[in-house]
Image (cartoon, rainbow, N blue to C red; front, side, top):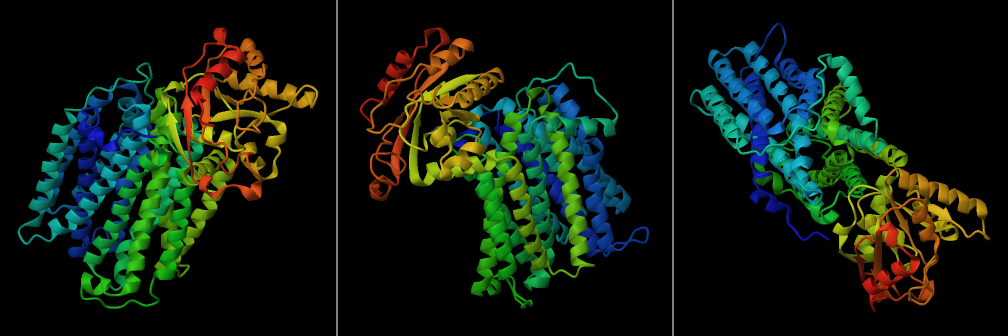
Length: 626
């Protein structure tokens, strides 16, 4: 379904300089944060009566504070002004910050270094809304998932590299502040040079008046999120991911030493496994989703997070051993299970997070997309703070061990995911459809570009099996409301999917006039809201594999509300598991993994549409392939 590679974006000027710029920024944040943390621990620093552990937690709060205070303001800037120019100013600001860091390290001035940490948080706050706002401006619709996957992969690899490099630079025997501050300064300069190659991304809301009231603007940004329930719950899902991820990542150093009996090298290895996993999962998203925004991967990701999070608890030893090094640690077979769990948590985290970011970008109005991202950043920061507070309470007053905290978080993830997917059934419906078209069938699509990305449209197809709406709905990434015969809609096994997929049941005038009238009202509403309607003009599933005579109902629909109609032909589906060729108990196993095709033709203008014309077009598309 996808005939291009996401890696081809690295050849494009519209993507590569931005990718390098954001990756170097993430690296620099983590080099400084972790280098500073290493210095605090190494020197057993005290300040204003605070011990080392308290200062480390204070520094984390100092970094995250700007997200609360300034995200709303810079979300407005990202929408109002051209983005590439803003990025260049932000990268120049980073050069200034790193010069200040060099001074702070040289003077061994902790308050100044904490101020630098605050400025880095401010810089990340400025960049965040632009980072996810510019992607849908410079990428095509079919590149959105792949582009987001590469950005997530690059970000987490940069985080890992910075996490490892910071403490290593601290350990250089020479005057180490020169090494760490010099490295950060060079990276900042290279990032600025890369930013100069980013093409222009025009302002999406140049008429916007900047509000300096951060509290009121924060409320307004969150209200933008609430305009679309799918976006709202996607943002909540993203924020929950940062709660889940922060809980696990923050505990890895202590888990490595106090539970597994390892050292800093084991800590780095476990962090690497998680980040390699999330990078792999992110990159796999494009292949698994056919280059489209496939939110069916989100429940799949949530299930994996819970499953392997629970297994982390059962795989953890009851008491730590003492290992002399990594080879000694990996010589114990049971330890491979823990490493595999972290790797798989990372992979499923990629499946979870990439489609959610892409969905927010896709479903948000361009005029305030960056402000929605700013609101998302505020909520992410809030959830991470809550994560830290809960972890501190459970590991302290409640007496939890770290493996018990992992178990609690994994089970809580199951509850949160069930809640989100129950109030936005589109996620679970898409998951069931994704499973269907990747297990029972192998679907090849021809002509997907002929379906408009916006505006009202009707897609019409021949009716071969009970799962035709699921196959078509799984291919078309815009939500499709299908008009279907009310008796099929009422089938016990499939009714749940059809109901939560918001299918429109329809009946003949002589069968149920009330159902028919309600169906036409729903059809009119969907067209008025510029949505996609799906229809099977035969009115019933074929009993012999041949296309039946099309009914005139579609002419009545288009006559009242003129919209283009896209003909589609389902091919090679006859005789498969859900068709009517054979009795259920005699369905042929060779058709279980049937290779089927969906062929999409050119849209038919409303003035040219007749049932006969539509039938002819679909017959030509299908040909002899029943």
